[in-house]
Image 1: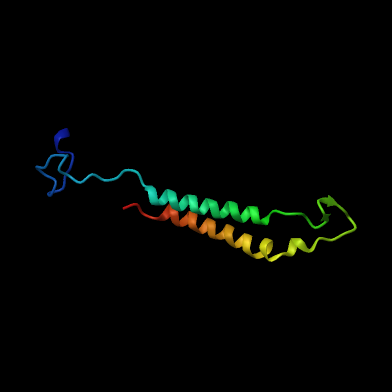
Image 2: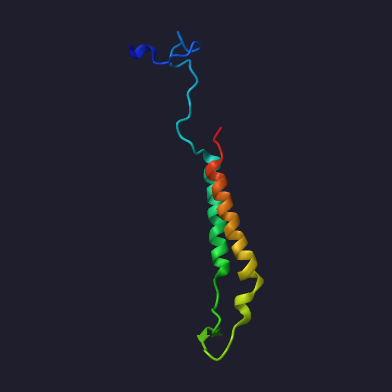
Length: 100
């Protein structure tokens, strides 16, 4: 076999390599990277929204005799985990999306 004829399809026979369509060897395109950055931002924002004082902290100081109801806020229980899950879903979509 000669190096000259490494394409064995009938369409490609007799054409030069410059005339053949080149395949993109890199899987990710710019849109994949944008989606990955959006997903990462959603994950980071979700974790930042989960932060806050723990159950026994009042005014920034630990007090074992008090209870902070702020740990059950809608922001920490519902919104932040939803953003983290949405961020991971966007990451999976960004990885599986085909580059055209």
